[in-house]
Image 1 (cartoon, one colour):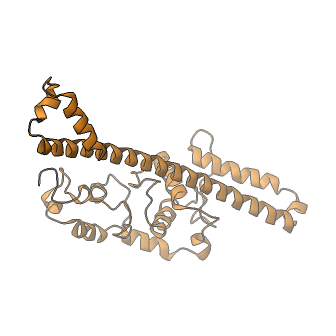
Image 2 (cartoon, one colour; image 1 turned 90 degrees about the horizontal axis):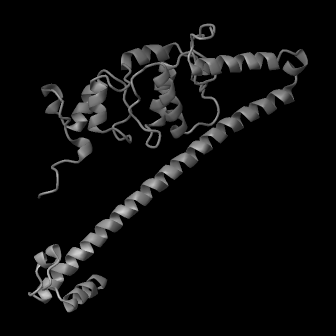
Length: 267
């Protein structure tokens, strides 16, 4: 049928695909890539054919499964332990900034439509071994000493927080004050929770904007359909009414004909 495609846009082959992948359907393409790279589950949001193609071409971030497994073997529980409350929207936004600053390939996912959480944490742990994003209890390896002018913004903020922490706890009485330590830990957790909630509000506002746009589009479609159906009905009801009368604004279209068409629209 005219206006319909054989397959959805997300499953259609990319115009620049080679013969190596062009003959593969989306599932087969996914299986081919997962032989080498660690990807989110097939059913995850955002796993489109375009995403798979751009991973295949190296335009989106990709991590070899064997490299990831060898890396994870050496991790201690503290290196894998997550810090504070995070939501996927916040994680993706923060990770995208990290990748951009480090001139890495794009993640390939939007913060408003994030990938599966377990996969995301595994990839972040691998890509950020020094724990610059401060998402884990311990770093896999230490970050080099900070040198002004040679480090990026994330590194500067991270080192600044460490310096501030050392200064704050320079007094032995503060170090030994358990209540102070618990209050500071709670403050840190509340700050992370606050950031996540702000991101959640941003996500909801984005969804609301998208829903309003879709609602307006459906309204336009319905109004167009009402006009077409009412006009077709009017032509059946009164064969003297022709389509070209409306298009050309013909004087043969009488007031009574217009009223009949308007009445049928209301019906």
